[in-house]
Amino acid sequence: MKQQQNNQPHNVAFVLGNGTSRKSLNLNEIKNRGTVYGCNALYREFEPDYLIAVDTKMVNEIIASGWHKNHQVWTNPNKGITSKSNVNFFSPHKGWSSGPTALWMASQQNFKEIYIFGFDYQGLEGKFNNIYADTFNYKKSHDAATFFGNWLSQTEKTIKEYKNIQFFRVINPGSFIPDKLQGIPNLQHITFEQFEQKFKGSTYISENLQKTTI
Image (cartoon, rainbow, N blue to C red):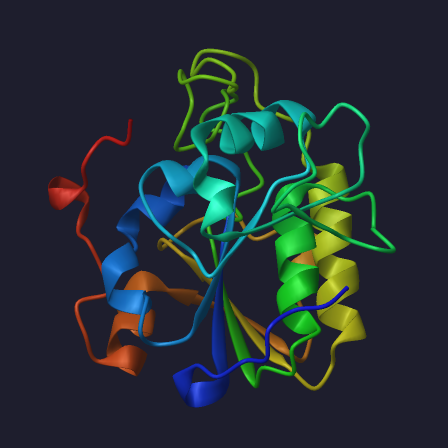
């Protein structure tokens, strides 16, 4: 796998999952603070430095939009993908979900710190937890929560493998912290307020100011 060298300030990366907690993050404020890795339908509203999508339907949506022609899109080889032009393929690939794959990709770039957003794992009162619920290529908000065991194990494996990187999972107060992600020396769980204090900027969007994503 070949990537561009990291030339962003502070040697920091942000990895964006699409759990609903990510609504608290001001996307525009992090753009110039580090390298941004995003997943799937994030491209509809924001331009990360790297977009990772491993679901074939999602990859084909991105290709149909033309977004891949001017941005870096990474995926796994799959004969169902409609075009290989301007698409980057992991080789070898992990066979993982998009979020953990994005985290793994970022971890290979020797960042000192990686901040993780929207890795919620747990559903919303047993229902599907995703910013893009009820939109094209996504389940309905009333559907049952998605099994997260594989995502969790893949995240744990990456963090434990890259011991020289300090990982921060940014969550809302009282959010679910899986047992597998507790007690890992190079992982901290911090709140959005703590993240805001660390970066001293308008990185946090309070709940009453959050907009509904289309």
